[in-house]
Image 1 (tube, helix red, strand yellow):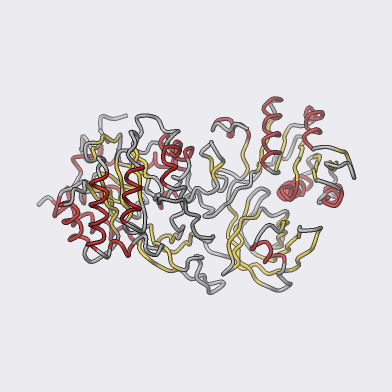
Image 2: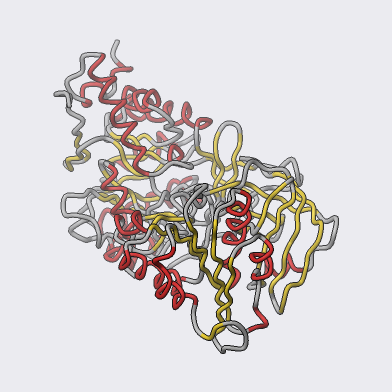
Length: 303
Length: 248
């Protein structure tokens, strides 16, 4: 291959490339995580883990719309106690982001304690799930509650802590306060609460009625948020939302993201298809005279 | 991928808790081994591999195991449900060679559909069905009517041969070029072991809890392999299973 380097660093952690398996995608089984690592991702995010295992919602949990996908999985997960087992098939050199969810400060503190494992690199706090009551957007809309959670986790864990942001009007204010509390970076963004009605049955498709919208529809919103957070704070950002091809990847990085989450891209595709994104990014960098991906970061801000 | 309407043409009680749901619908080409998601609004969405699909008529052979299949069993003629598909990877069927179709329980659904396709292509096949006792016999007559050889194995010996269909595989595998299998996990594991041992070309269909059906939620992972039943399967060649570390 060429001399272009895709290596990046997130809060001191070296990643072989900027592609991160987004939380919630084929990530709640040791063999799935192992396969995703072999497929070439730079890091893997686990499913959002709660103190106790959760069943999640009944199918349909997925709906297809013209502009993207809705999901309402219901934070199904094997519980944070299962983390050692979940990571048991990954090689030493793999990079892991543990996503934690909960409905109380103690839930998050417990998650952080249980994530204090050698093979965990970053803790991501899911404060913005749009389809589970008391475990998501209701948290991030309440800045002082969010900060209590952040306090508890940062004081419990030595790992870098990232916050997964949802779409709110006040996210820049939360970012500023979270940084003061010792947060290391941000994952931008979560899905957006939405609804799809089937035209054959004229019923809401999802069993939960509401779901989180992902895919192309949310990408420009995510790019905006990445752009604004980078402009104000130049902190590590994982850009997630509607990455469907290399252009979306390049946009995120140019807006200021250090890394890029991949989720909806994997609908109906094997996880190995991330290789296409990796190769396409490499080609873009080559064609445009970049020696490494880090130089592309934030270039959209240059005057 | 949108839902398509499916009208109930008939809901035939086969035995005990097993039914054939006959649907009139129009979805894309659905081959043996493919599955669809059946959605009953406000109830649930469940995966099913049809036991036949032709000329817009689909047969779903199902066992009542819970709320949703219970609801299905009470569907009347003319009622409407919704389906999406076809999903997954079907059996690869050639127009030549000798086929052994071997299965157990309602899992035989995609096998009898395969028998229909093989029969149309003039391919020789043997259909072997394993059931607990004679009351559970399912598609033996249909397989015979398609011109195939058909054998019933019952656990209690109440009809056909006493024992498991894997016994047939052990003694007769030399006669076959291709093996198609589908059944409960224990059965699938046994078929896998035997076919690896004998070096046979074998495709096995697996059943798991499929939720999203498009390869992202991970609920249908084939334990220990990283393979997804909904996307990489439900039909796997045993060479793929081996490559991904399937260890029965």
